[in-house]
Length: 590
Image (cartoon, rainbow, N blue to C red; front, side, top):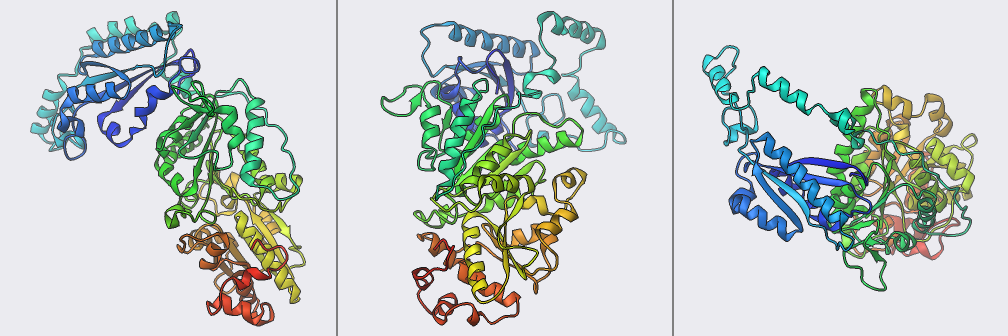
């Protein structure tokens, strides 16, 4: 978190140490060249909710000391009930790091100081050191129960400092102006407001292109255009295989001992570990800089708890009128549900996008680009925002460009846009949420048009823009009734073809839903395996043919007038699905 020249003290609980082990990587990632001083202080009280912590069970402070040293830390043990000891330990920690920084021959990893403040849980309150200390330590109401009142006063005496002693102490410590030291409320980490970044114009794509490759190219130019912003790229797995090869070569893995010939460097900006929460934390903590998180979609869900806490805190800041000013952080979820069959259903899961769509859409933005141009436009747009977490669900395989650069910018600005047909003349609308879904939707529309039907296809880049707003802040982010009608005319029956499970998307898009007779949704129905993309689409009944049948049904037409008998047999499961690939309709992705 701290930039060079800053210092940060972070108080941690031993329970959090057990649950969130990402901090174990800190000595491997901290660098004097681009990080400020950091002092972790663990409150070692030995108890979690219902029992002792593992630290206490395994040997207490002595065990923790060995563990910390093994993980590259330099522990300092103190009496956590003594404020003077805590103050000394902070000063001593910073002095140790300063000595390391001043050494011209320093080698990494740095042995980061780690203060261990021994105490008992609930010190200064009744029930200290027992499970009572976790929740409400009093066994009665002190207002009406004299025994509870006496117990509270007796325990709190250990914390009480008479005003005649406290006031001179406060006066002695109130030297912020003299020492040029900000109050905690004014700490730089609490008031991040980096300058607006330079966002290069995207290079328009016309032919088939991998959306991830387009993002890769643009992001390198973005980094180069902003040399004053510290970069952190959180990477829990394989960056190159996810289409970010140029970015990896430019930023390099952050390691202590670079291996010759590999994209590694001591000062690398790619923070890599097989721990999704840890690498996401490395990016989210860099609020004074520029950040990106790239992950397989199925495993990005492991970041959800951390992302949600960030989103909630930022949203609360908006609610009280002090919106956060750090640059918005994108999470690119790729190698996703519809294109990742090599490891069976363990790698096919749209849960993250569905869960984030449940958060407030002005702070948690979920985006479904349909091609390379819209992927770059969405990423570029995210970096123009402040205090937002945005999840972009992006395919990495090569696909056609469905919108040009100008249309991609319009898609970002509005959240949705027509990619086929004319809504004013249409009698049926297909709403595509996702890249593969957009291709299948266009293919279905083409086939329906051959039978005389007028169909338009709308790409829904940001579904949260078209939800029913839940408060005034979200209402400022969502589409007006006029914008809604312009994109989704109420008169049209519509099919929603979605990357996600159909039920969450139907619930989110209640404003578009004309009821079961006028609105249907096709999406991931938890069917998968070692299948390619056409196989995934077929298994989940989301091919162009399934979409065409659903549209025909909504129009009250006979599907046999749209599909051939062999194609209908395949849709019903009575013929091999390869029939839908042998002679695909124009515009199909099959």
